[in-house]
Amino acid sequence: MKLLVLTAVKSYEKEAITLFKKAEINAFSNGEINGFKTDDHENLIDNWFSSSSEKVKSILFFTFTEEDKIDSFLKELEIFNQNIRSDNPLRAIVLNIEKFQ
Picture: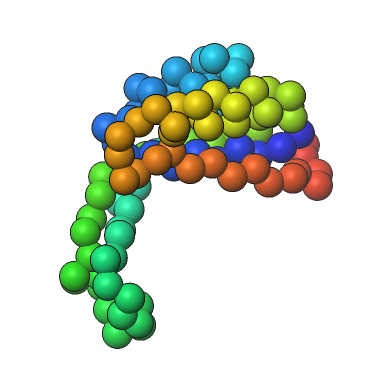
């Protein structure tokens, strides 16, 4: 069992859901989040409230699932990201689960 986390800009929500379906991951959760991207390399401590950052409406998905489904998902994600024209590709991470109940 692994934890898959995916972030995307809100405009790619439907496409992200399609990726889960293609990988036969039928149970997942999501939540709306705000993403921030700064073009400058200033110290974030000096910019605590990100006043000069671009705020982007984003979405976060997560699911607990089997490794073979995650492998399929990541392959589909790679194909998707290669074919979009955006500065905001979908990003995924996979974490091992030591214990679960």
